[in-house]
Image 1 (cartoon, one colour):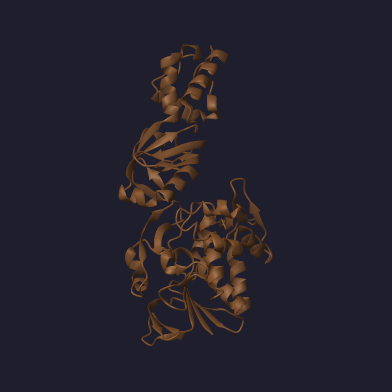
Image 2 (image 1 turned 180 degrees about the vertical axis):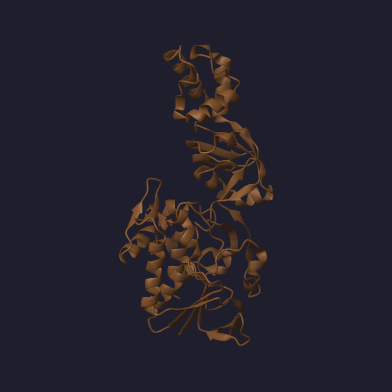
Length: 403
């Protein structure tokens, strides 16, 4: 059996390894159009490679995927975060789970993951052809004819696994559309919020450890750490919101108002009460010197200034009006967003081959026999935290069974 894997990234490598492991006598070849293999693995997690997540509940795992989570449920029963951990550790890559749940190699070096995958490829005798793109796929009976870049004669394969990753433009999926697949238009996911020249950007580096963020005029909301940057806002709360709101925010052309609850407390009466208790316990202290809710000092001073409360004011001078004003800012602060910035090197899109066209039990196309998919070429994407790689490992593992 001749098997072609198109794409030399995480999903492509795992699909090729799975295919060769399941069919030891098959000829497996990976085609990569660029001169680089595992490029995203190399730069992920700041060069450390966030290989998966520590989440062990499949129902919780599925919630990390704005698109594709429910469809992946059965696949996760076959290969999930625990299997990923076991797979790499059994091949000599020691892993660790960080407090936020992200899993990295103990070496803190993505090269550990790359070396492991390359060792498996070499051990299994899988061939790699760099600088070789696929310009056309044509069904021919039970086989698929691939036309390689720089060649006019098509090559016949019994099975083809497509793991070419996401594309920022719809045209990048034209070759799959021509085979009859429906393509969900790609739009960016996992991005930060730009707030050009807004005073909040002067607090760059400040983290509110548990904030609530929502998008005005929508039902979109998330919570978690919020990081103020020199261009606007980032951090898990923002990135999660950008992932779940990818299509909506694209429709808004990335111009909208973000509501920030700096302390993630919805009951404003509780907040007023805590401010009043602070006034009773520290009546002679300056507002600037006594920070309730554990907020970072620079953020607390910024909010006091925004509330037009004098730094020289004492807690016993806050009064009901001041408490209400401060409560409003703490729980319902508003920021205009004007644009987005891609999150580090982790380019992720939502969109791709519609999951309606794929048998998610096998990853085989319902449109074209003996054609399979793995990774971000599918309309699957996740929040940050190792979940996108997990989808790549899982779909590659399942696709490689070629059932």
